[in-house]
Length: 355
Image (cartoon, rainbow, N blue to C red):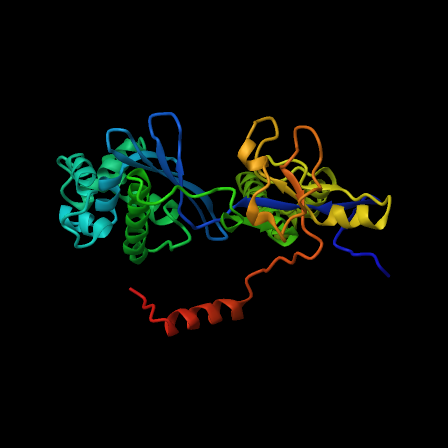
């Protein structure tokens, strides 16, 4: 009767899917690098359920700002803003600093605007991005660049052409935060603060696994369908579908712990030495960081861990500080809708308006 549940029985063995600790998605995290060509970097992990894409906005020592996402690497910030619809140079400046004509950021912005050169129109900017992506056919460059921007640039904001304006606002605010950190106006974000972390539970991890496996199933069905068509046969659904395809993928991941994204150890054997050992197993948290690297700050105890994580339970050796456990009284919220509605209503009552 005291069994906590929360585990799977695979091939007669009890397996538990551990909690995965990762950086918060859809939030600008500005990091200050101590060395390198780009000492200031703003990172965004854009996630919308379908895509999970890492973005980087980097400011070099010369003041130049570059944006990288998906397969698009180091596009000048001003050119990307023009591709998103900023018709004039003044539009780009106003997006970042507003109407502040005495802003100390203007010098950096003018340096980046100089990079525009002959890129005067939106179509010119899209053509530039298409060339940087290595698209050889001139008539396809703009179309392909638009597709990349709509689909892979900040996908959590939207995939339509109408979302480009919102993406431009988001990038401008990220650049402003990057400039504020570079000028010492605000401090860089603390990546180890638990407000900048999110815990992915069993449901989140199984969702990712199922989506990946389902895409593989669709690809396998398409391959079998085309193969039979070439032979002159008219296949039915049963003949192109392998009945155990999904089941075997899910069962294999749960049995071995090997997950999507080359992650290992996501499912682990559930210990039954005593009740507390079992409870520790189902409340275990693993980090996405590599154990072979030092990552001293990530391994240290942080003040925001208090009340959320057990301050003493962590293994010795290379995984010290990277494998943690929930505090015995901790409870993870899963963003119910009423919380979101309550937060929005409170913001409105405080006078916050939608731009």
